Image 1: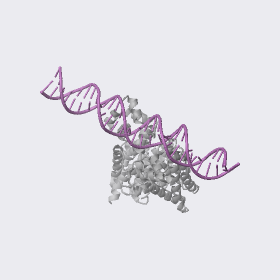
Image 2: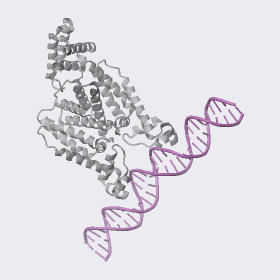
Image 3: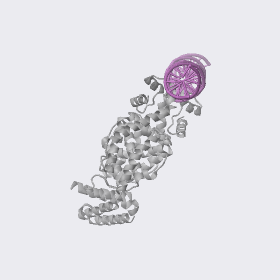
Image 4: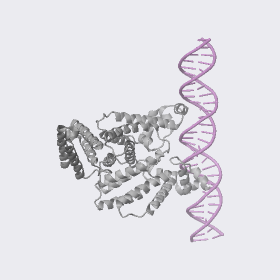
Length: 221
Length: 221
DNA sequence: TATCGAATGTATCAGCGTTACAACAACGCA
DNA sequence: TGCGTTGTTGTAACGCTGATACATTCGATA
């Protein structure tokens, strides 16, 4: 039944859908639907929940690269790809505007993102608090995805530009503390992490560890 | 009549509104409304148009600072402020998801923004094409505004951080200039060489070699 | 004054989300 | 085997929605 509703939603993204159409598609009458979901919002919530399951299913399929910032990059692209592939779902998940009521299921992807920014913060690679970095990434990621859906015009170049801009903003490779001496180390870490093919993944990993140690020593001195 | 509709929309942002409620508020019957607006979407379009008029009215009240990037900053803040002040309007203007159909009135603010980025480009202050810079600013500005409305949690700090991140991304004050990155790597090499006790002499030497390779790879790319 | 078109009220339609109520099946228990 | 309880489903209806056909009124123009 959820599948039928999802199909109708996917068939006309952004449009509203009729409970009776869902019932007809399943071959059931309306009280049955109300017995299980209680209201239309209940059905929508169930569909959204399934949407997040689908999203997280796709996302968890990709293993971690070991580098949190690289994982943020991959997560960003997966986020955009999911939104463009399932605009109906995505609209319900992130595009519905009801001040105060935000789907509880949104917490799960946000938690993953916060985990990544927290790891990045542990490595002293963020120039803003971990929470704000996660919010920064999330809000720009949602913004670029929703905009592409609204305009019905995928723009991978814009998505990549916004992604790198956001990452640069939270890692401080450009904005604020350029004058600080350890900013140079932070920028170098980012440069190495963003180009793992130059030294190879293993040496890059080691390099990042060394630079982190160097940065820590500098901070404590 | 548009005012009455606007009032109802403002009264319950994100919610749908009833044409009959509008008619009752104005003291008129439905055929009158349909005579002037043709359909509900027609009324909504008229309200959106008025919303943009209001928005541009506020915006044009502030004079240009003479610096296009500073104007982009001011425009960003005005955009967010308008969205938070009139979430109902803003949702209709930028938050409705109907692939293919985007309000024509959106073109006006976008035109202003494109004018600013074009001026910035003339001054050689952008590292991306003028059009992409405008899209970058717009998409992040909308994203941060919509998100604050959805969460019903104004966050000026986040807005400012995203704003500076976006501006840094298009002006290249952070990510772009290769020379700056090379300078960062070079500075890190000096730092490591000056503190061989942190990693030990052998690892420090290896680190310097790697960083040199990384710097060369960056320079040639 | 006569006429035409714009503006407006009356009444109605199909469709929507939601619900009260009755009918039915499946189960534990005597 | 028979009974009652519980969970599920169909019938019918309510009030509301956006939208429309039709008759009517009003004002400007010729």
